[in-house]
Image 1 (cartoon, helix red, strand yellow):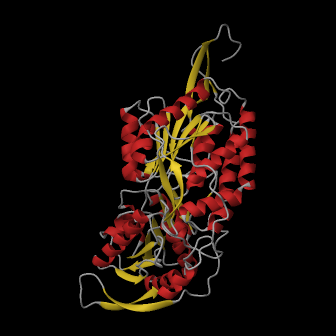
Image 2 (spheres, rainbow, N blue to C red):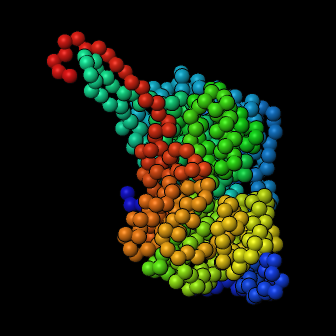
Image 3 (cartoon, rainbow, N blue to C red):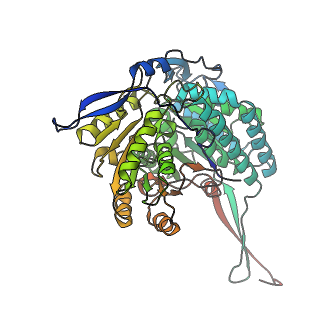
Length: 542
């Protein structure tokens, strides 16, 4: 299957610029440096958010899913799920804790040890996963609406890109279910030796809030294809779509206890899952800081293997020979996609000094044309940030950028007066030692840096604790080959960005994680390899 760029269904030529005004601001520590900075007009922002679309979906599932049944939490507690467009409560969701994790793990353990799932023929497991993919497509509008309502991402992005990607990934792993097998291995001596690839058991999975359904599929798909059972903890910010998707999986024929979903907070439900003695494998996607805690909890309990997909500060390198217009659009997408809330965002844009000024002017113009507004409205490219915590963190980083004497080219402020919207922001004259060039901001903030030659940019691009992804724009195949081999990152995109496919593995170097998800590599995390050796009596051949 041809690789799908996640933006392909969303990209459009934006000829009409958002209304903007100019504002004189003092920049950084130099009181004499004053410049006119383009701003989104407050009138345009107010108009864009004046009449919000009523989400075309109802919230039907707010309880925990344990052993095939929706149940209240043991404590009876709930927590609010919010609409980031308004900060209003959408629903109150069951708040799982350690006792609920115990119940879910017990159900998953029984389903693995005694239930039909691991003993089912791989072809039957394949058919259930295929039926689920069909149901995902049938209910795509409801899933996309819930995702947008609770997350803030554009509805068109969820409906036309992320939901199809989810269905495709489950079909991909359904196809693997009956193709997982070991080998017969030649041995020295009269012995028959074979390897068995066996399901690992109960898999604990913790997914983030930025791509709830996509990461649901990345984790649940390969785990089920291999014959495992699952306890999944959804992000407390976005608990709604995981419950809906799990309900559809049971409609497809998944036996009780095979997939259990516990909503709740990280320090309670997440920690209980990571440290549980009856969980055989753990997979976590989130921040590097939390990933360290998860890894420690797993090690201190039963030393369960852990897959980690963590943070990034990915370089996007624009070479001297690049097509500037194409590079501007690609770099824009690389950082602003999903409101900048993407672990592999191209958040350090390195531009060759000879094209820097032209690139900067065009990048700034593109950011000013970006359509911010109600994510349910057609044509909107950028919705709100996920919550007030993320919203305030991004604005603090923007302030730090200004105070460190980076040049604020556009944006830098709140968009509108309600919800968690932030103007697309561009900084120039960014230096490698600035906080905005080192920390993962996770927001719509583009930092544009200047470089002279390849050796220099490779050294600077690799001078980070992260290594999740990188981008390269060049017309020279030798330059592309040099950079792809020199960059210390799990994925390098050449003349494109954010191309994802079910078959393409994803994961990071250094503090961006451990292991890989998707593709054939994603199966390895959910399998044990067993060697079986049997004596041969008078063999005809060895």
